Length: 336
Image 1 (cartoon, rainbow, N blue to C red):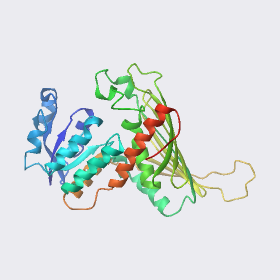
Image 2 (image 1 turned 135 degrees about the horizontal axis):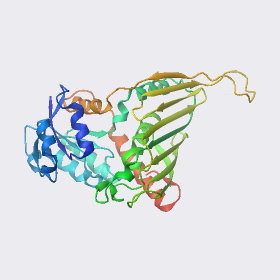
Image 3 (image 1 turned 45 degrees about the vertical axis):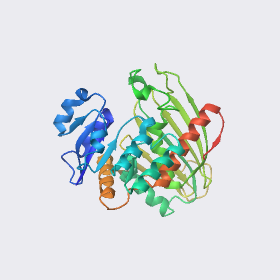
Image 4 (image 1 turned 135 degrees about the vertical axis):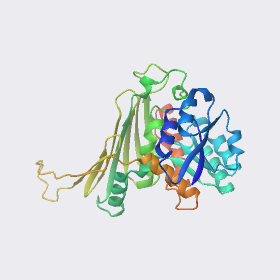
């Protein structure tokens, strides 16, 4: 059993705790740190968590094996470095950092200390993604041509102006860091590195100073093309779709529960619509959040390595950096 502390108990920090507390035999939360403990005292008491107003007591406590962070992006590097120096395993909510240099520093610190570094890409653990990965690995879709993804939520309509996510320095390029980075990560895992991006990002409807409408074109190193659309002023939605010469697969819904596979019509091409036969699978109900935390606990306990590799995590941060630069320059940018 991994004894963990949580740093940051906003909405998502609470979700992380509740996904495993008193449910998992691999990880439990015993401590937490927030700026104002009184704001979350009731929640901490309910969950059996001892609260502090800084991470210092947590890093000094030999009974704590790991620290789970749900904190502003700009603080990630210093938090990872300090936690690794204390000899504790690190679970950092996505994105790992906002720059490739920051990711290099974070990874180097954990590798030097010999501790596990996990990034909170819970959607990696969806059974629908596992099914798509089997298709890709088995060449079911044929030569891979193009992928698309959309991920939206009305975040920008609900954020108070003093929230850290309302600061464009913390969340550049609209919904990229809170949402679309999940799709970027999945595409890196499935199809390899990104070569070039072209991003446009605007503020159209939200009352705070962040972008709410963002779209990105991708060119993968393999030659595939890709597209992401992410909106912060509309209803929650999720979709990813992959096309190949032998068929296509689409994953839908916010829980990634619907899986649609459509093989290409192998008959003569006449221009007619023909018969389209789509196989539908239901993967709803799977808890990807508890799965990622238990995978982190396994890795921290000497079991299977966490599935997001260091190289993938670093490359994902390089992609974020290129997306932000492209939005600023309004031009295509190569990924460093």
